[in-house]
Each structure stands twice: as structure tokens, then as C-alpha cells.
Length: 300
Image (cartoon, rainbow, N blue to C red; front, side, top):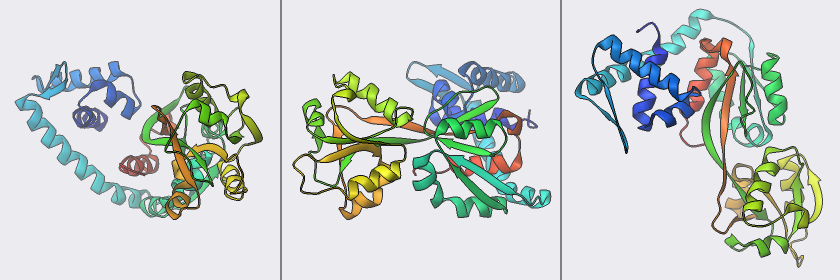
């Protein structure tokens, strides 16, 4: 069993999340697969290590002992990764693909550390999620970071971190907005194929608002273009110019008071960012090193 550390990782994730289903989402594998791996460990050890309760899971005494051992093994393997990569001594350019918000506003903060960890050059492609997944399938990129899981065969998806979409303007807004408030703004919208547009349209429908009732002044495909358009809009206009965007995109402008954010009343527009890579590279040392580093970032 120790030759297959994936089962130990699954066990550690189950304990961390206190749930088989949550561990399944984090690891990018089915819940039956999680159950099967835990069952394999119990059969191997010839003892029960996990009790499933209504409010979560509880470790048995043997499970607690095994958990301590698994954590020590995990730490040892993590500490050995850099030595392993030095032995491989491959020189190449590691290519990461990401959707716009991640590629322009999240990933750049970590590129230097990723480069250091794999001791190779790192290049980044930025495009819409659909195109990034196609590039991954065509083996033009090594790891993808996307805003929406476009599920394709042969690809592993790992839930990464949560993102929030907010209404923003260069004029101060109410803290919480009603459906009537939304109709009183001028809008710049994302293109209809974007995940942001589709997600917000679904939320608007829940509160009884149709996007085609908005006074739309423009439709843009890039969050950066939207941010710049609203930043330089007339600040004295009677109708504020607004749009919806990831908080990562406008974080610095919110902090320095250049832009202002607001949320829908009784609604949070949230989504998860995902890490994706080819199943055939599941045990690739470079991919594994980058993915594990990204997953270790609890808050981005």
C-alpha cells in the first residue's frame, strides 16, 4: 500500500474535511472512489479506522494512530520533492494556462515561487476557460487554472479556492443592492459566452431581474477592459456606470478608494477556481509539485 501514496492522501483529506463528499470534491475523484480507498486501507490494516456519523466522521483509536503516521509520511514526501526534481534535472519551460481574472490578478503573485520550486522557466497563457482546457487537451500547457470546470474526459479537476463576484463602480454605492437598484444603473457587461456573464444571469433570474432590461452601454470580453472603462467613467454622472467582476480584479482599487464595491441583498455571487491537469500526468513530478504548492495556498 505504501507504494501508492494516493490512498494515504485520500485518507488525510477525508480527515481534514471531516467528510467523504467534501474530500471527493477537493481531490477531484468520485465519492465511491474515496470510499473504496478507505475500505482498501482498512482491509490492509485489518481494522476499522473511520466511523461515519450523521454529523461527520470520527476516527477510531487505530485511525488516530494511522493518521499520525500518514501525516509524517506526507511531510517526508513533501520535503523530498525538491531533491527528486534535482535528480530529474530536466530543463524546459513549464506552461501554465489560466482564465483572465486568475492569470492577470492571482497567478502572477506566485509565478516566481513556482519557478523556484521546479527550477525551470514558467510561461503563462491567458484566455477564456474553454480555450485553456482545449490547450490542455492538446498538451500545449501543463497545468490549467480556470473559473469554471469545463469537464472533459482525461482531465483531473481539483477544487482550488473560492472567488466572489461583486457589483462595482467609480461612484460610491449602497452596501446592498435590490433588484430596483440594478435597473437604475448604466451597465458594462461581459460577453455572453463568459462564465461570469452566465453565473450572474442565473443569480439575477433568482431575484426576478432580466439582463436585457438593463441599460447596457457596452459589452467587453476582458475584466481588465471593464475595470478600466468604469475607472475612467464620469464620476458625476446621475446614473452610476457599473459592472460585475471578481474581487481579485479590483482589490487594490477598492483599498485605495478608486473604485467601490457592493453586493446584492440576500445574495452572494460566488464560484470556485479549479486546477486542471491531464490524468496521464497524474504522477508527473513537476505537475505534482506545482499542484501541491497551489493547493497549499489556503487563501489567495
